[in-house]
Image (cartoon, rainbow, N blue to C red; front, side, top):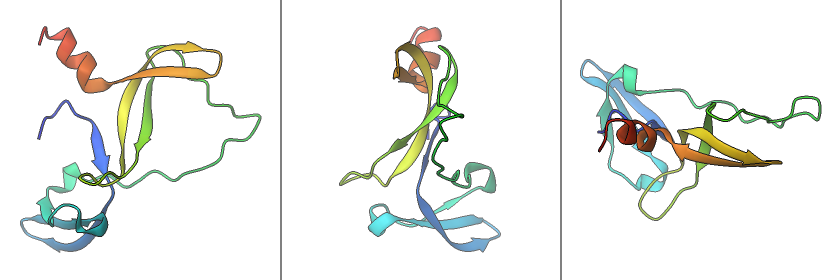
Length: 105
């Protein structure tokens, strides 16, 4: 697991043991796996923005975006930074690309 990749996938807790938390994934797309509690994050609630609460992050703000399920990966969400914006269109870059670029990789 790359510590720079800030991604979380939709999983279901199946058991809690001394070794960690056992999770399964959507449609068994990945095999069950055991994770440390620090690697698990509760999914944030979806909510519709009200007209008086528009989504308007600034350039360089950290945001999260949903990732849809593919044939090989469960759905989830990732962190990204706003690189630029034009009216209501936001251009983002996953955070690990920015971190690796800053280290010269």
